[in-house]
Image (cartoon, rainbow, N blue to C red; front, side, top):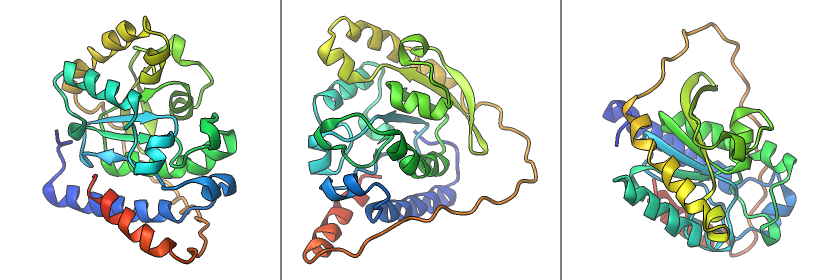
Length: 243
């Protein structure tokens, strides 16, 4: 599922995505998360996908494997994708936070703000036409509005992210159906509309305007501890093959 970019453009964007991944690996903006994480869960999937999913934060399985949505919620996500004729490899999956909060607690506002730049840059490089926000945290972040997922799910809208217009489609997080079985039918109903949204293609883009260049955010990094460099190299080799 390609976004219509040329092969060269797609290749260049993928290389830039790799560079962003390496930056994220070294990030210590959130001291607690940097100290307790096992891996930085950057994202995985088709780096030229039309459809992108954005969840909340990595859980224990994701933190261990370095891949988003590999637990029970991930299995359900794959099932729901299969029901609309898609596979995990057709889409790109990421989270609002790239590091697991201790004890799977909710992301804190400062952590969301610290990680926001990575997510927006991912969107810019992947260039999806449809973004499905899974749950409250990603929906509120990208809409820049406190309205919750209960009111917004299943209601697509066109928003501007950076300099690109995308179709935002909020839906419940698959984990919600694991704890509230009746939510599964709601999820299935919302998922059933995704193919139609994809056929619409990219929404009309805004006219180019002369804008002031925004400075690149400074990313805090720390020197690796003994033994970390080798482990990081192995993790990087594994994760770079995911997009």
